[in-house]
Image 1 (cartoon, protein in one colour):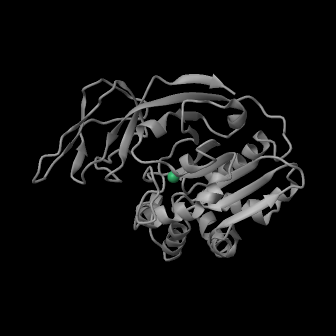
Image 2 (spheres, protein in one colour; image 1 turned 60 degrees about the vertical axis):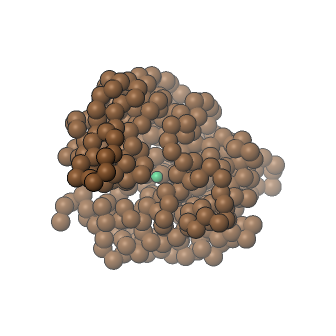
Image 3 (cartoon, helix red, strand yellow; image 1 turned 90 degrees about the horizontal axis):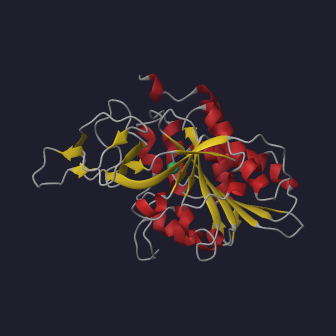
Length: 336
Ligand SMILES: [Zn+2]
């Protein structure tokens, strides 16, 4: 078996406690909604959301909240309240069941990323008539999500690359971002991607200091540490946990300006592309083959730099119907 596909030992050892925690989450209700834990202080302050498992196979986030809940870290809040949410409960269940039965960690469990819709590609209006689990779950969570004044949505990814922060808009709120254990900050992605991310529903009328944190490769132990540390640092940044002295960190800011869609399973990549490679406007980047009807080739509509480059030797898209990769403006350094 490919080493990359094996379940790492540290994760095997945590599987039963993660399953127990998920079982506890299913029984823990807030506003009548399962999968939601609330920790509050006696002092007035902001409502802070920590959300995880928007994608069911991104288990580092659930391990981070398992630790927050079990190690009683949030019993020491100095003001406000923290609401911890397992966003995609059913996909999380699916993922843990697959992992327990020995599915290869990456390719095998990709099916557990969602139940039937990517929860970060939700329709602009959530309708109960929409027969998709993720839409119904988003509707169920809507009142909880709306109560957030600040929120951190924790993810992880397939590539072997460093953690990064995603700001849905162009606004960089340095107070929210400082000290987060990442190297890159991605901005403007919500305007470019198709569908709405879960975090765009957070807060009253979308007014919420919400960011996403991509903690690293799904199955590395340092990703699990990054996810936990990011949750704590975010709580310090918004003032619900006591602040700590931190060293200023250097990040690069990547503003998303375009995307290349994965439109068909027969689509192939026509150029080898590495992260941050420059592409010229009009370059033919992918083409669909072996098809009866014609599908237009995907060309770069903007010049820029590749973000989330396909993995080496991966010439076919992983997720048809979603962005294959993005195009960004020239990366800019920033120190926070
Ligand atoms: Zn994710």
